[in-house]
Image 1: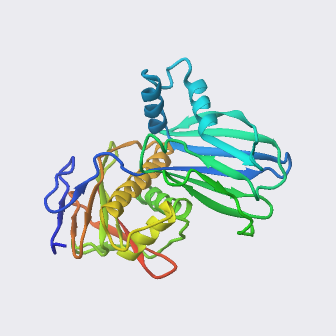
Image 2 (image 1 turned 30 degrees about the vertical axis):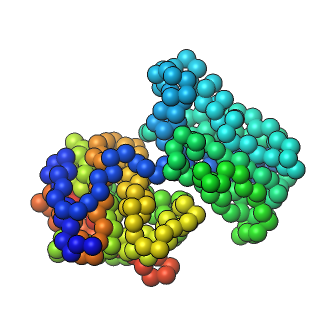
Image 3 (image 1 turned 90 degrees about the vertical axis):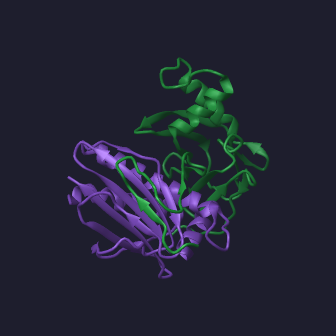
Length: 170
Length: 155
């Protein structure tokens, strides 16, 4: 490595030296929280994505201009998420109800819930959201119930992971 | 420099590291930085402009912390700083700035962000365009490695 690699910020950022300009983010990250509501016994799921990433993907898939102005905005996003985020127990899919979505300052928050489930251990989670479109998409799923908690990392090389009874909730 | 402007970046950085890398960093005492030599091995730098202020932010990682961060976020990591790590640091810089942008927006402060630039290597230097002092906040990980946030803004 060279000893002097000098960054110069001239208003819009002009660079002198050895540096990589991250023109478009090569890594894409999402965060999903998966928990059991102790009162309702339902799994509650909150996905957080960069809205632009989701919109770009659906625009390409549907070959349309896709933004919040699109008449089927929520419907197309719902279809996509229901295809690419699936939970199973003993190979049987646990139906997830679509609760809705919110967009706030560039982030899209998507809410889903299941019918009655008592524990997360043993669930097989499949999360291929955006992964096929973006090779470096990384989806983190944080899970927690009364007994266990932990984190799963999904990527192109691993789209399905079983929640194991390893980490005890504190 | 207005603390109200700085705290969201610190909050966002700690939040990104905690939620995405599963790593709790502890912020140490802020101080003025006296020269341009980065204290870590790989830096992401981003410029920002708002009606209230104009300047830049950098996030620098010690190499071991950058590698551990990648392990935490992606599940695997190389043995040394490479293009994967610089990509990641660029994205972290994006995420931290984006998080701060959301916090500041709720306070009525909106700013535009440039595309982040990443520099790596021993003794690389970071030059902030602002004429104001550069404030640096070290963030220490449990294993003693550090990340550093630097700010410099013209009011």
